[in-house]
Length: 396
Picture 1 (cartoon, rainbow, N blue to C red):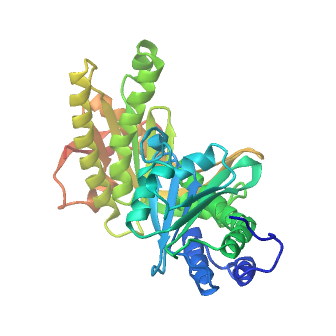
Picture 2 (picture 1 turned 180 degrees about the vertical axis):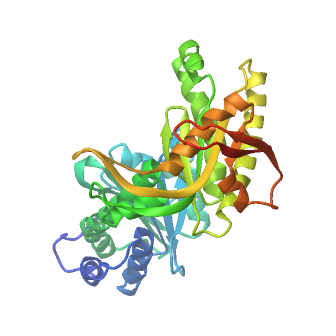
């Protein structure tokens, strides 16, 4: 099959015009991709199925696959794990051929299957009545490469004019998709490294040193015990695995209950639960309960492999904190500071001295009174504060 001149008028011209001028207010590439496919159909191209495969490099997954089919108003999104390239669904697939360097892949699905490429995807497409399939690389800047595919059920497959039109869309789709993917990547990176709320503020322009707001929040600080001894005696990779398992056990319940982890500090973490959220303090203790259960399960797994159990301490306080940008003229940290943060840190330190895993200040305990069973520990001196502080332990 031959294609027409890529510069000649094609049925895709109206779609290209829409991609260029009509998508400025569209934030999400999956919505744009689905609408583009529908518009290509309206332009006379017999699309039945289309996919867009993008690499995101999220901490937990490599990328995403967007799938659109005839009759759908939106595209379905499936996350793609990092180990996908070791699985049969990828090995020998059209996406693998494109990523490995193919400039175009075309498969006649009407021919005898024994004469065509061998992969389960082609069998699935034949079984669903598709007749022709084409895939191309979608190039972004700095060598970043993604994949777009189209399929039809038209007898005889795509005509040369159809292929020329689809190919003509590629450069514009690349530009439009790169903007959205990089916006999503920027948001993902900020959420990963500073948290979702802080990430939103930074993207909204909160980047000036010294800028910030006062937030009333419940503050939680957690620290691992005897980490220096562990890191000195364990192999490096084992230490990293241990820290990741520990932070998973602590972090996932915090996120699930509406808290935000602002930073990991060595073997410790700092999280806040803003009080404008209903029942923020109760949610913090719910998160602590689940985190302790997760740590118990982790320690059981560690014992089974001959590792010593991990001990930790958690300090919790409530108060006003300054939430914003602090640092040098060229390197900023978006964090919280203030006496309330210092108090939570001091309480975490006291957990070891007082033999309690979780210590709460009276100010915090009063906000959950009657909802949780607390142990009154008494008044204790807290370094940096003039008056003794009444403390409570939580064993949930």
